[in-house]
Amino acid sequence: MGEESVLYSQLQPWSSGGAPPCMEPIAGGGIPPRIASYYKTPRPHPWRPTLGYENVEVVPLPAQPITNAMVDVCSSPVGMSTEPLRFPNLVTGFDRNPGHAARAALYTRYTPYEWVQSSLSQYNEADTTRNFSERLRSDAVRVIRETDEKTQVGQRDAGRRLGERITDATFWKNEIESELERMLAETNLLQDARRALEKAINDCEAPLHIAQECLYHRESRQSIDLVHDEPEKSLLKEIENLHNCQERLRNLHQKVQEQLRVNRACQHELETDVKSKESAIGIDNMCHQMNNFSRGINYYGGIEKFDPTVSIPDTWSQHSNRINQRSQGERSKSAQLRTDTDNLINACANEVWNSWNNTNSSLSRRATETLEAKNRLQMHLHKVQQEIFDVEKSIELIRKAIMDKSNPMKVAHTRLEARSHRRDIELCRDQAQSRLVKEVKDLNETIEQLHRKLQEAEAQHQQLLRTRCNLESDLHVKVNSLFIDREKCLGMRRSFPVAATIKY
Image (cartoon, rainbow, N blue to C red; front, top):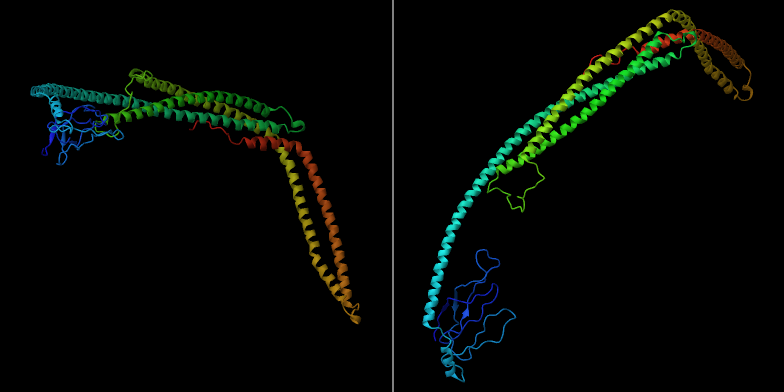
């Protein structure tokens, strides 16, 4: 039997990944062919079934002498190999009974009729399957076109709705931004008004402190000058007026603080809404510009489900309108508070100014009454002070003269000490020695005389000091009263520490 290739049109189906079963013996006897390749179905495979039929090419082994001893091992999985099967020779049969083998082979073959019917069945099945596949392809093309058109329409409608949403969000964003700018400007003005109130309250502290200091200093008056006069009455009235002004300013300042807190709350709502709308507009712009070929598109499971907690267009627009109207109402209240602040500061400034002038006039009149007596006594005090100054200068001159005698005394002593070291006969009391001794005596007398003059000058200085003390004690009552009214009280009240007009 020569070499030939046999093409099997049908093979039994096997599961993917497994090995094909052993093949049937070839008609006419011969060596069983070896399978060159077979189809293994991938898992999973979306467009092909896991079981099916395939045409494979069967390649025979190279030509060899045909013997009864030729055997072929069927392909089997690793570890599943069994004893090799021995195929009989259809011509000679088994070595022991060849006739029996030939008869047995006749009963294992199909008839020609069965072969023809099998072919017709395959043809009919192929036609039926092909027709169904054509109809299926036509329906698939129609569905594809319909779904593509529906998808495009849906995408265009979604883009149009996104554009409308961007327009609405931009409109409300501009409205909220405009209101936010007006609220910021009003808040800045109200903050200026608050600072003006704080400044007015602090400015009241200065005249109040001055009035209290004036009363405190006037308590230091002595003797007959300690009276309940007009300046004291004016100071008490001024202090009461300042306390009333501060109380009214503090009440209004508290209202302004509360209004500023409400304004900041409105500002926070407006800023939060603007940021939210900016973020939403940015996201919608990105979504509006997105297409089927954009980068970053992906599947997100369950993202299309409805969330009952989110807002709807009606509540969305009502929210923006509500915070806008609330901001407008708070701006109106803030403007009214600024007007009240201006009026109150002006009224308090006028009241404090009038009280200040009345007190200053009373103090000036009282100071004038004691000025003449003070001037006369001050003149005598000035003369005594001048004499004290002259005596002090004289004392300094005497002390300097005493200090100037120190060096000549040292020179005389040094000469006498040096001459005491002469030897033998040279140590004599000569005229030079006598003159040096007389010089030391004269210097001692001079220094003693200067010390007596210094004592007299210091005694006279003490007398002058006692005289000045007596003059000051006699004039203390008038001088103290004049100093309090004119120097301390009027000195602190030379300039009005509160601005008469409001300046931001």
